[in-house]
Length: 148
Image 1 (cartoon, one colour):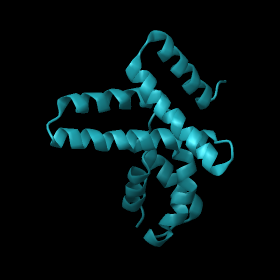
Image 2 (image 1 turned 180 degrees about the vertical axis):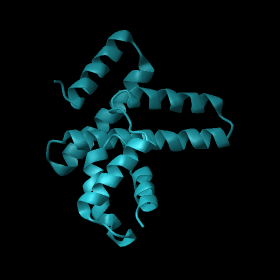
Image 3 (image 1 turned 180 degrees about the horizontal axis):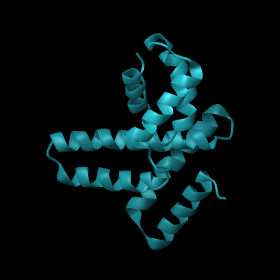
């Protein structure tokens, strides 16, 4: 099975061969972020770290899209959505609200959490399970709803 990094490298090569400038630029942005973290930490980056980079870049593009919409800039909005679509190809399938709620119920049972004060313990168990497959804010809100 190929790793996320190998998939990214292969996609950049394919974009170069296809002369797809938008895809190439978007993917090279992620490659640069990965390389920067490796240089800063002097360590090889993990799959989980690469997933976080993809999520961070998608979140930045979502903010760009929201700003472009407010400023009535349709070209910038379209570009942000196109880049988000490119990056989302590399993320695992996202969990829906019901799937997250089922995981939250299981985590609450596992930790024996009885109130909102134990939310941290539930999140500690839950976040590794949903990493890359769900937004942490959404998970946190569902945990908050389901804890008494």
